Image 1: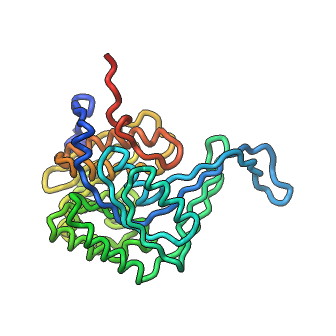
Image 2: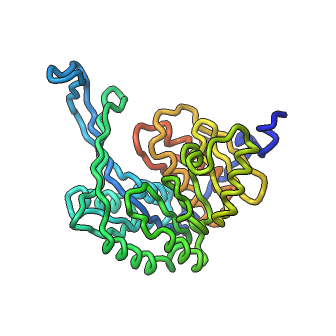
Image 3: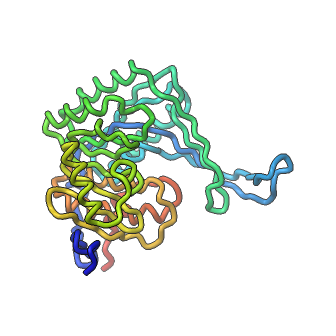
Length: 331
């Protein structure tokens, strides 16, 4: 056995039977999502020629789509699984903001949207031809301090009525008061899950679970050359920040859970990886939903792994649904 294999427990999901969870059980799970939201706009078209004005393709747009992005996608994943999803966010007082609220309502997400008249709602516009993304254009501004304080007050009001707090950080300014939210949620006996962004993780001190990908973790602990080195650095990080557990998402390699127990590695269930956009949102949303339904953390990550295997086979940011996670058994 190699040194890498001996330092962690590998779980073969083919030998683990993931039970079908009744929708009613997940319906009792109450998750509050707080974070940066955005409206994802997609322009789909064909490319038949190069522009005479510059050496760039000319896209003839034939259809458009609008989807929930960022923390809004996280909340949409939770609602799609049948849980009770609430969302606290900041949007502009504009047409994209109104559209985002409409999409949230259609997805059964209870939105507490603080409207900031001084900013525009965040938009990510993607231009796609022949199933390939040609261009992404971002429109974004930082919310004002007054609106963020209003969001914190809303957080304190909603907190008693939820089981799990999920903080989705996209570094757009919506989680300026993340440290205060963590401390107040933990004081209220709530589990706090963090989808991190950026190298400064001291603001996440005291969280229950943090779910970085490989690049995000590498920015904080540095590169590693073995599983032992990785486990040692994560253990040091967790203890220094008083974080109970860390779930490292590793793309095609699956995910690894680090806690006070030996590391547990779950191989990926993905068969065809088409687009990893939103996969991290689906993972943390599924974990939160399952924890809220009373499952253990180790069981929750098995379901999250299955959910991630579904969404990476789709184009763009698309949430998981209850039916996809628990397909009807054939007679």
